[in-house]
Image (tube, rainbow, N blue to C red):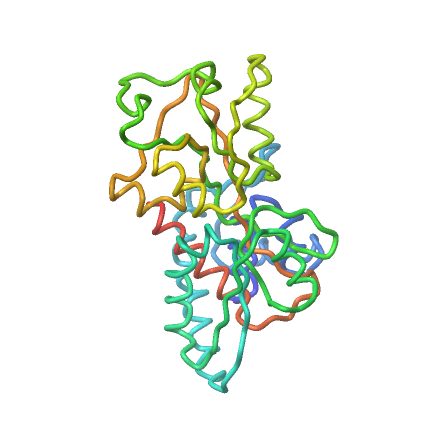
Length: 294
């Protein structure tokens, strides 16, 4: 069984798209298709089904997937046995990811690569993009980016929900809150230039409502702090709030009708990247998120 074929199968599964998977692997799409067919021939079964909605796993594909990840993991471990020279790598991250999924992903990654010296740069998505383009970091976790020189590999759809101080009357209601009620409350706008904030605004505009924005903030720590202190309510990404929620400092509020807004987190890297350990880091981060989100 060819390791490249197994990795190709994992990529098609992750991207749910042959074209994007081929681009991330730096191969032509026909070559990717050939790899998948070769793998299916080796296993004597069909693994994937193409449809208008993307790519689906067959029943045997679902059975094979965890074995594919195990095979990839063993392959990385064997490689690392022969890569024990001291190396330095720099990883970029938006702040919200650096306080949630990144620490565990980095811990697991470095446990397998103890010879590595890892530096982490935290900043806004636009700043991280500039650093990547200037070769100041090798890869990064950011929100989704569209750039001709960048491959943006999605890793998680982070729900955006409304959060309030537990003493707020929204938190004491046993029913979802309407957009009209939300529109008259002091609202903290976190990350106003983000894609998801535009989607939130569209929900208000469709109801002919204008949110009562009292703060525009690009710091998730500041947005959390102001909300915790009861100075306003805020739409925030759920992945970054584990500590505040578990400690009872914030309360999630349901909305009627539901917004279903999400922030797409991705690992980004240069198209021509030859950065060592890139694929292993992506793999570790992917598994970390699966564990983190249950």
